Length: 333
Ligand code: BYC
Image 1 (cartoon, rainbow, N blue to C red):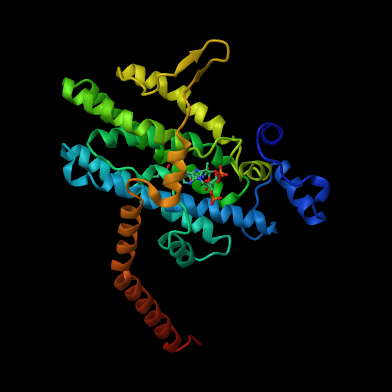
Image 2: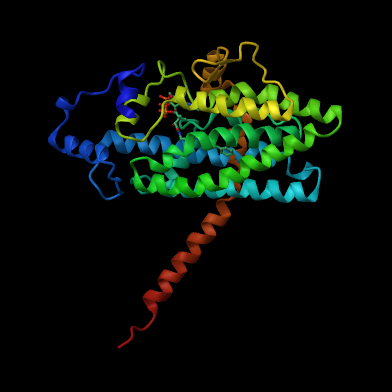
């Protein structure tokens, strides 16, 4: 697959003849489908790319709790509240698996969090949009977690072992998230005209940002070609985006909702939906920190981290005390 990606629209990567013997042997292992593990030799750039992607992914899971956290106290029933809470807790767990996977590459969690808090590290653009109604909980589960699954299933087969293994569990939990989102949309669409309108309004607001989650078009993606060669990416941004559209349009039809894209049409010959132009200027503005909620999201995360300082201090003090105790304890003969 990656050979195909490198040959088509993607930017070029270093030719194999330019690789050092070590790099060539490394690439050979990747080509043979051997997983790379934490203690294996790897090119610096491979390590850096993984740290960048895995940490951004971890940050996205953690920041991704915030838009939904906004609705915990206002969920319409006790059952919906319990489900939403479980989902948000899962996201925290995903962040932890992913930070741990990134740490295997020799970076500390403190460094990763400092990069997030200073605004240097990115997290997914999607979480910079507001959640205005309960229907947004449905739209996020259906569209955002649905997109996350499409992006993340291939990551279960990526070349870096600790990342691939973390993704297996994440994907199982994401499937539950997507189902709960679609279930909320189904209830609203079967409800009163006002409830159905809420669902349509949420779809209208989340559709285009969800398509942007897959990243820039292949022609603009700076990292794809190299990541494809290293089998970190098994499908290109545009391929995954197309999958999402093909999968989601029939689901919207089933709900009786319309996708907010006048150019959307099914192409009988290719078997795919063609869709309208994405507003890339909006995407890049969000990446620059100018989305509707960027500042609020970052402020909330920094505040939560600062508020937890006493707890982290207490853990360290406890660990130090334990260490001291075992050092002082008389040794067994
Ligand atoms: N938002 O060369 P490209 C979730 C950046 S968690 C922000 O194509 P790459 C969920 C990109 O980082 C969702 N930035 O990059 C959680 C790069 O900038 P840098 C997160 C984006 O890495 C809780 C630049 O644009 N999922 O679903 O080859 C609740 C050029 O892009 C975005 C993951 O992180 C974006 N949307 O491909 C519910 C999955 N797109 O870093 C749901 C793992 C691109 O060079 N990540 N950028 O400064 C990936 O698969 C890839 O990193 C991406 C981007 C497809 C996202």
